[in-house]
Length: 311
Image 1 (cartoon, one colour):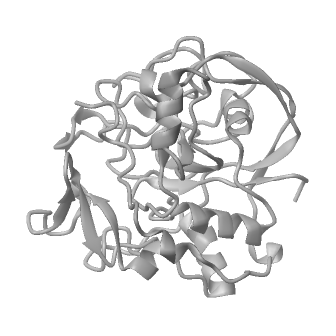
Image 2 (image 1 turned 180 degrees about the vertical axis):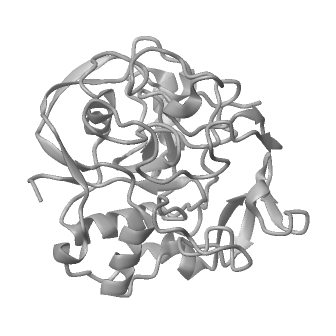
Image 3 (image 1 turned 120 degrees about the vertical axis):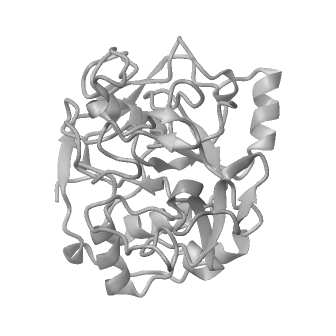
């Protein structure tokens, strides 16, 4: 199984839909659920990379400011208030479709179009943030993370809410929860099927059977599971989170230059998702990273917002 198999199907080629009118901010309509993450010297990356092609290392130190973070990924309820206040139409709504994991397709995925080499991802007409499995599935639940959002959707929400998307070093600093050079928000212990209540990842045989031993076979509520030392929930697992930065290899090697050329235009995502498992996509580690085109949307991609001052 390839390391990228669970990750982020690309919607490359649809960049023309990304133009947006200016949306006036309306912070009062957005009920923030923030925690303070102190700034200072932050760690970025790792000296023990797991996925070479993602250029997870080396471990470096940078300075980050004090920030106020949403305690969880942005929820369906929060995004719904944004849409109600602005009339915003997401990229998936404009395109008319998005990627849905095959076991989540109502009635089965046999007669839907898949992604070559990643056949578990299916193109579903009418799949959006409000109807994450398509028009034949249930409406999105308010306490779940909003999904089927493109990078531009995430950025538009963040601007309206008075915040922004985080940088990678800010994201890793927050995810570490004050614990220093650790692979997971809770420390160094690898989650197993016995203690997977720490996060929402795949259990079972990918891509056909998720046992749901952690309580979920899809996204979990944004505030599910215990928070880390900064009070942040599910910084790894559950849904991938868009960041403010392009996806780039942090290296001057020839291999890195080739990666960066191939990844031109892609945006960086962090955290992994409910489809990750160590056996094939070990990206629910803090240093793990991936990239995708900014117009791509799927049922396991969301985002989190940061603010420069207290709400």
